Length: 483
Figure 1 (cartoon, rainbow, N blue to C red):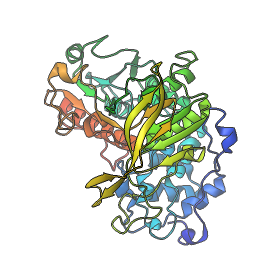
Figure 2: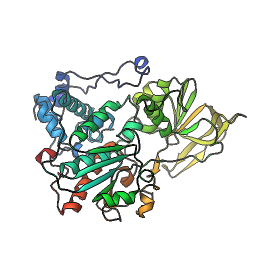
Figure 3: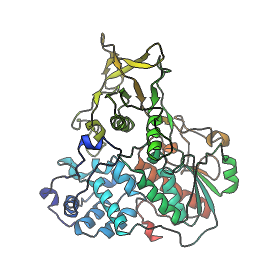
Figure 4: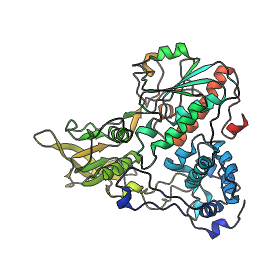
């Protein structure tokens, strides 16, 4: 512990954001950086706790107190080695992870927690600038081949680990660029796509091959992959959106959120030309759903020139501070205000959607809603009498989550078992079909990028065991650089 009194001397500090009026003019990342001295001061706030609960918060088991101390000491290379020992892609998590580690930080009991996420991003970007981030080819090849379907964070993490073990890894991606939802779902203002492509290029240099524009079930069957490869990993995400079966759903102007976000990302990647078939310019936009995807829709709509943006959700407005029944180090059920909310949004809670309304041309003009009051916690609700009204809108974006992976391409043809939620059922990441594994959202359900990376790493270890009888791949607490 480099500075025992650091948490007493320094307040939590985060990089400044570009002014709202400037950042909504484009889709570029808008967070600045801290100076090296400021970063060291932030790292000095880490108390090197006897029991570092940040470890329990992080699905990857990142060695947080150790890399914080290394940053405080000015040893950025060692800090990067510690960070890379458990996290394949800290440049992703350092930008878009909701930081469960910070929610579990012991300092957070009585002060703002250590700014772990920003420190993580600072470490990896310092490492890239210093030339320390290099391809990681294996020392030798095993002669075994593994097909990974899906190039999101789970598929990419598994591929990198399996390549380290010496297996030849091919990643099949149906879209034009690698990254999955990192590329086509997350807006550029949170994660510029050059960051994803930079990592994909390193993986290619290490010997991993990407086959983009290849859809399993259309361009190549899953049975063909089984015949050509010694193991197959399904990392296809949870991409079937939850729908809203309301009267008027067929009106023009109602779309699921991911269709909207994907089009904007495709346009920024020069895959399609504008004008986009779904666009917010000059429209009153209604976002239905209070999660991260809804927030991404808000930021995108503001950048596209929406007249107004309204967000509704049927849940209660969370409290500003932890409620009595939600103590540290549990995930805090408190109000979260994203950068997109700051840019302009009318937020509403306890709202029930009843009916989409439109004009004679079949175009959306609004959503009929009512207020609800939850009873006995969230056991049931009652409609507030006389609260029915119409929220005017010309574009409605449904952002109420995803229900399960798409099944037609790989799951149904192989008879792969799914659980009651429709996710792939596995035992140690192996499906009921020999040699076929699953990881990420298609296995655990819609979740966080950091969980996808963790699942990809653990699945790779199980695949390596399946192929070789044992595995030298690192567990959660071992370094890839030990191989």
